[in-house]
Length: 237
Image (spheres, rainbow, N blue to C red):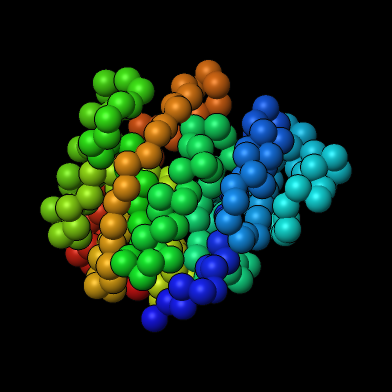
């Protein structure tokens, strides 16, 4: 049972690959969130100068920097980051500017109040106002979510969201195997099997396009479909 008199410490995992244009701004935004936290950056072998920025001028803007010696993918970076987490609660924060860290308290409040063990920040849940997103981007994400829901039996509106917040003890029960964006359906399938309390809250999302550095592609969408089947039906670990 959570002690309401003791604030939960947040471990913020920032997977980073070739984000020189945004890494400074996102770390500044993360530091401004008024929650007790540690910031763990995992550089997935950046080649655009981002690694050098983190080791140099940005040193001191995070608590831990972990360096991959070859590019392995977002899932691998998260696996590394989770292994270094020492907080009570863990959240993923992409190093681009699509997600606003000021949304974290919505997710955090549910765990701090002991109502939830895992909280997803949904880009598609109903809200009073929202940015208008690209049609095909939205359609594909919703299709993947519905496909995942059919097998996980979770009624999510946004399985692919970056913003997933977990109690650390829940994450410790899950072994992540996917190295790229297959992480999202994998973790969802494995969380569903644990039978923990899962909530969603609406969040705001500011999408970037491929010219601006977006890395997920068609192959990742196909892989996500495969991962839904694999981790819900066949792979139990």
